[in-house]
Length: 88
Image (cartoon, rainbow, N blue to C red; front, side, top):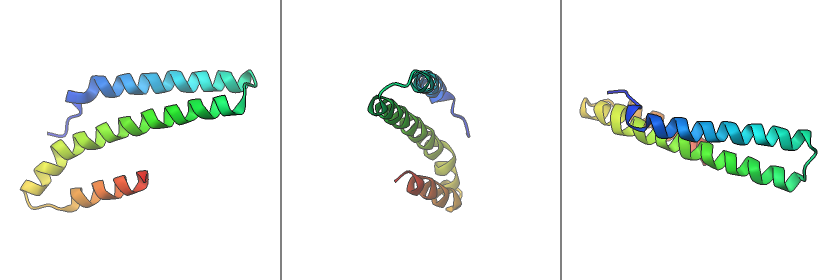
């Protein structure tokens, strides 16, 4: 299948945390907090989003890509490689 259901809860959890972090960062900016502290929070949020994206890509590989390769379709593999290259 094409489902994210097995990791759906974890993905939602990560995104909710990231959303809270972004709200906190906006508040820090409004309060004119120290730039390095803001940067640290941004980097933590970025790392969490990367972790979330990796989980989504892993899910895609476990589902769509494996199915596609079984049926002789390499396009999905190329698609995943392009996504991973963007992350580097």
